[in-house]
Length: 114
Image (cartoon, rainbow, N blue to C red; front, side, top):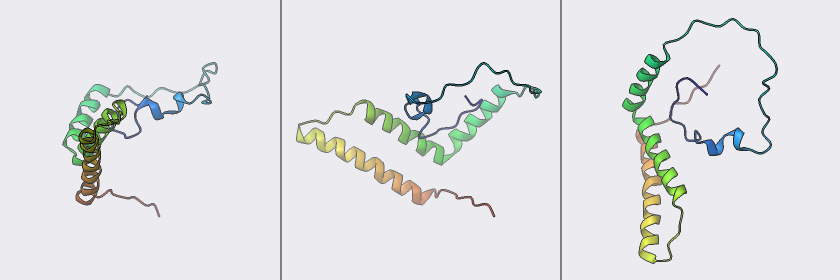
């Protein structure tokens, strides 16, 4: 578990290896030899990180999509009533259109190493 978490599309436990039946269990029997580093002010760093995340437009867009996706996955019932179905479909189209528009407004920076 990281000390400071950032919004992540795959951060939900559903997608993590520990939920896979064939995942290897951690080896807790071996003791490690290491020299501990000085303790970091995690609470202060976490607070600063959260302020930066809240001020960042791309993280806000990601959070909006994550919340929408959770809601969509948790209430995935397809209505047999045309009007209700059309509304659900239009909401999904609207969210994906917003993502496409946001990609144009806030292009993802790609890093390449030389």
